[in-house]
Image 1: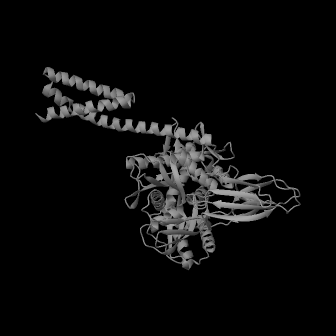
Image 2: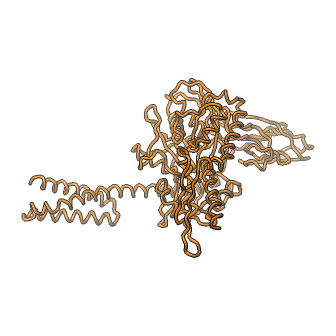
Image 3: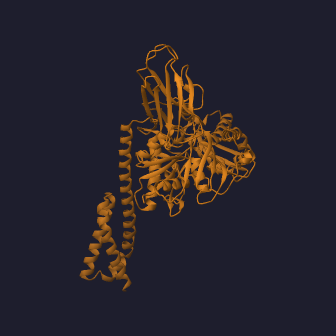
Length: 607
């Protein structure tokens, strides 16, 4: 049976899981960590770094280290979220050729799906190292409130990474799958998911026969741990500015140090009442005088700085319950997902709103990946009896006369579904009508996301409002939207399958896929060389340690001198292969080295 990995592509950290028998397990990376930082960097030598190694060099290479790329994926260049990121990021964000977002690292510009693909490729490598086989299929999770363009951009990131993303599922839904898997539950649950960059709340009914039905979902794709960190950074920057009249935001390295300190301080305050933020030599003045930043941050101050952010999540919870037509008391379990739910103020606010203590039975950092792995197995195997009924997170409709948004499929409608509505023409003798397909919640069409457009032509000439056009929207289980328009009198019709755009053309995606494959081959080659080098150097060290004893024991005999000379030649040839980075030659030398080491050990052991 083909293996399908489950990937939680997070803003701050990412995680990969697989089904082992009847249980999902998280796969640790080489360092033994269950999660990997979603951080990508390019070094001065042009080498790509991903994960922990990238995070460790972020301060000294701030301008070429990308974090929180997920907050930018699938967004238009002119969106307020992108403007916010430009103001606060230490790396350079530029406009792409299709009104999309690109990131400049060293002398190359990358699309956001390309940056995210590097993280996904790292997850693929971690899984392949663990399983000892190639992995091609994945289920990748996204915030429930992601729109179609953001979902498509995530799918494109998977394709670039060499993965066939067989399903995109919502993070809270994935968490509920892991929570309910293998248990005969029959209850209504709320999944409160506050991660590094996004917030979601989903209300679900879990049935005893493996039915997971989402009733409502809502959220904010620009609300998360990054915003909590930003409040601490603002507090530190303002305090330093008052004291020294210097704005630390103007220095990229100082800003990266502040980011690290803010994140560390925030995490520490989940377990203690105050923490010391100490950043020596944070900046030098024009007089070549080094300045230091030292402040004590209390849990009380952090809660005061971020109170409105926590309140925003509670307001969104209120909306989710309203959409689900439920009172807080009717929710039987509240599942906390995402690293930010470790903050006492967050857990307290959730407890107060839902009037019950949140469930502590799931791991907030791992549960989403586990759920994705469960879904992956269910899609390729028959034995997992599970039905997942999700909803569309945003309303779908068309733009009507006066730039209004006419909703056809309401938010939180269970998919798959279809809806039909009849519209009339708005002008006399109108022979064609342009249909703009939109997604969002605003009554003003231009405030929503444009998904696609098409023109229905050949309408009969008639006075305004006399031509009736029937518009039908359909969504399948993968969230693919099809729109069909028909002139009810003439039968003239036109349809479109709405393919959301990530801002990349097929040719661009193909080139990025080729580049990612080249990187993978090079990386595997580097890893093979590194493994052989370590093995060779261990044996060389042992042979050189035994040399004096072997010379003493057999050096006077002709056969002994000949054996020693051959051994020296093998060691020198191996050292040359290491210097030249010749993996093939090095692997050939390993066998000879092993024979030499065995012979030397045998000579010494016999005396």
